[in-house]
Length: 64
Image 1 (cartoon, rainbow, N blue to C red):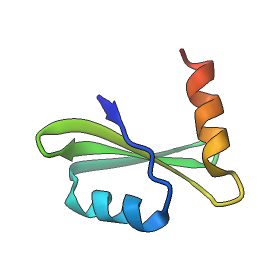
Image 2 (image 1 turned 90 degrees about the horizontal axis):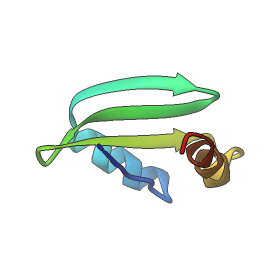
Image 3 (image 1 turned 90 degrees about the vertical axis):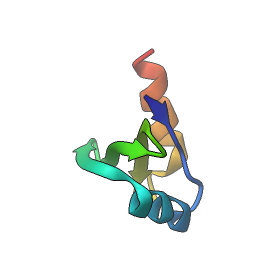
C-alpha cells in the first residue's frame, strides 16, 4: 500500500474523486481514506487544519 500525503485540501479531494473501492476510517481525529488509484492500493490521510501534517507524521513514526 502506498501512502499519499497532500499539502492542500484540493489535492486530497482530487485524488479521492479518482479513487475506486473507497473506504474511510477516522482515528484520533484523522480521516484515512483507502482504495485503489491507477491500479494501486493507496491511503490518503486528512487531518483537520489545526492538527496539521505534524500529527499525521507523529502517528506514522509511532507505528514503525
